[in-house]
Image (cartoon, rainbow, N blue to C red; front, side, top):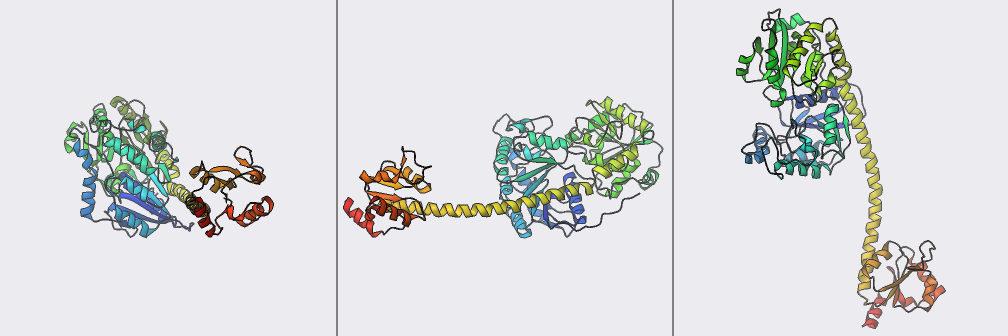
Length: 555
């Protein structure tokens, strides 16, 4: 039965602005969009700011037109064009500033800026340091903390300083990836960024990086929209897809099955080990159709599927979903399939995807990265699916632990905590500003005293007090100051600071009062108790006409 949509509830006032390159195209954008919509349902003022907009929505704002978006995307890839031997794959350098985006942020004036996937020309790394709002950054792939690659595929140079990039086939230790990583370390440090991984595995990788190792990193699992992906009748789903078959259905899908990290070749090899008459294979996502010739079973490719209801029916119609990815920060298709009651087979080394599956309880986790073991996992699911009630276990787990409602509640808690920290920090800043103003006032007064003393051509002087101003004068006039005097017993050490009675038998040109706000009292003490001539006393409030006499006397 389809779950009901969530009704809005009243929450504490907090305004969130999500920043992402796309509004709904690709897994990262969909994860952001689903969270955004759930936040609105829960009463949070949530807006989205993007570079590429594909859907009309009053809560989505765009900072540039189509033409600018395309050339910004092109400029982002410009640095890697100087590496002719590079492999096919995206490396983002984030070099092009986006003043219009920063202006939009100022106009919207959110309490929290929530960044998601922000590469592909959206902004520069320098722009991130210019955002004058608290930042939460949901890490949806490796790009925020590598030299630019989105999936390092076995390379761990991001843990140190990148360079000699295997994707670029570069032999230069100071190549563009090294430079990108240096820039990230420099500009991220200027913000108090709260880093959120979409799986425990993703969070751990962020903590291991040279970029985020000193940052606070937490995990809030990616969300599955259970208002779209849920169990329905299997036969009805087959009817909608026009699948008139009694064969067991194996499905695989992704945004782009041709991505090297999606592991399609492992499934193609595994299918060769299965009976060619018993199974129907369904595929969705961008795909070179020539690869279909290598599938011995009957197969249907739906291409890229944008209709989520149609996609739900693919999941529901399937008996098992195979996710042979080498790397998945979370495994969105894994969660979607499970939400529809269809168990999943994935590799144990696939990153975040195995976190969704309990082996042989609600799915199958393949330990070895081999096609034979993948095939065995598929057969185990098909043999045990009904016996172990795996379908209901899958759907219940996603609803209870990985739904958009669950994720949004955790983010709301984080937003409130982040906003509260801003209030505390603002109060601290006010206090600090007051202290700074006081110190700035002191600094100006010290400069005034230094200039007055420089104009006197003094041979020797005594300084009353050994505080802020006295120590500054000591640095400027080390040879002219004979000693310091003070009535405070804690300051008297009889090496540098002495009791004022020492002045009775001592020759000096002037005595400088360095204790501010008590000049009159100290001057009265020096004149009446110690017999110091008033003309020899210099303070910030003393008569400047005396200085003219000292200058004339000195000359």
